[in-house]
Image 1 (cartoon, helix red, strand yellow):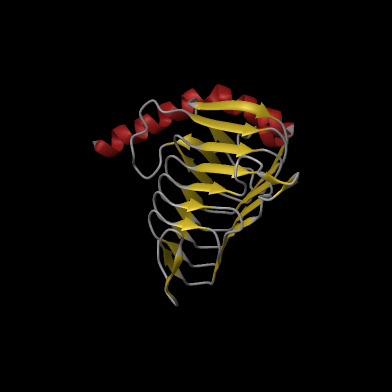
Image 2: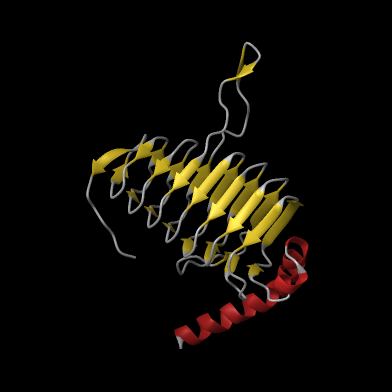
Length: 223
């Protein structure tokens, strides 16, 4: 019975998302791709500054879902925000972004690989380049930012330029973590809860702490 009501709620949410999803798809995609609704946008996503461009590798209804429930958590009435002044988003397959997400593309390139699953309260701020590869799992309250949000200058020159972020395939990022500019996470890594990541880490690594440090090597994990 619980599963029945869960599926009913999902169907109702999809129906309510149709007007916004239709508008979004036809704004960014050509007619023959847009009519298939590969991108579903929750009715609770606030759309702002819709510039730039979006490219998708897989054209199938609902391949990309933005602003819907994440990992079984109830979303309540919390809104999400999607804003892209300029820049590019490349979706390379199935993408699930939970409710209360905030995505801000200022002038960079965001690439999200296949089988991407993010729970609620994801924050992405991209001004340079963020590349997330395949099979990445992100828990709740995670921030990924390739810039500081404000320019800091010394003697008239910027001292905190944006720097690219790369997250390898099969990386699991724990809740309340922050991935900052310049971070490089190789494949099959695990980021512990509440970590602040700024540096580069090898494959099959368990990292944790503030700032994050290497805790164990040669690890693996299964979703």
